[in-house]
Length: 80
Image 1 (tube, rainbow, N blue to C red):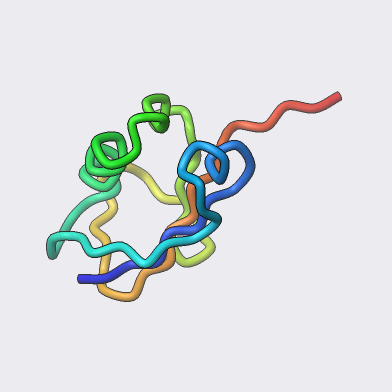
Image 2 (cartoon, rainbow, N blue to C red):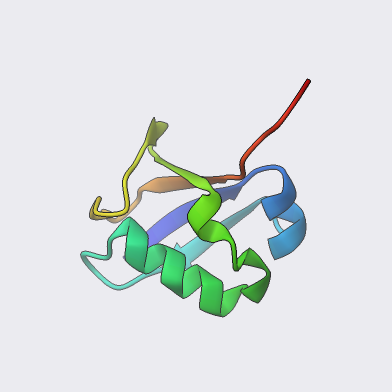
């Protein structure tokens, strides 16, 4: 299946892209996606700390992805 990945903040620098079309096995979970991304992009080693949104809604690790989903990788933000 194919999903679209959107990268925000520092993740854009870590991956070198702001978005990608990504092929993933059928019925993959967010947890599995994180593991695949850590292997493909070792700079994302702290991905467990990032928020994940699927189709503009925050998602937990057990969510099963569907073909065509849009997945946003959102790093922690701090401000003052």
